[in-house]
Image (cartoon, rainbow, N blue to C red; front, side):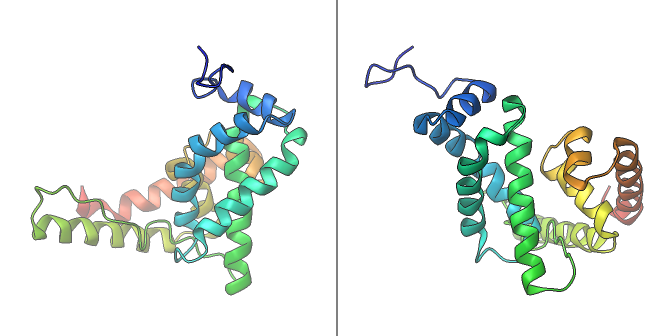
Length: 191
């Protein structure tokens, strides 16, 4: 299939193809990656940053860094996790610049997407549940919280989390197990 300019359409291409072409300088392939992953990276950065003031700047800086460092990517098929790590590092640097400790308010301040047919009571219940989850996450030690956010919000594999946290996969499994147990206990009333 070709695009309107006669060149191959890239929107349907897999990540490996796009990242490989972008690493070779193909701006159009990189633009497809940007379009494909901007919503995910914005949502992910929003979970790390307490506010949204610098959200778009962080995502934009992350794509600039990715463009510059794309030739260094060992496995182009894992570009999604690689982009998430870049955003994570930049967002955490932003948090650390403002606060002396890492505070991943993974849900606090999240946009509540209530369905139009839901009444005020249901929306209030959603908000209370999100607040309870944010409180439960805030109680977790930093590594457990970050592992949980990477897995549950970011959709990262255990290997990707291990690479991001610079920990063995077995440690990541333990961090996630403890984080999940804590959250299950704390969220029991919302089941």
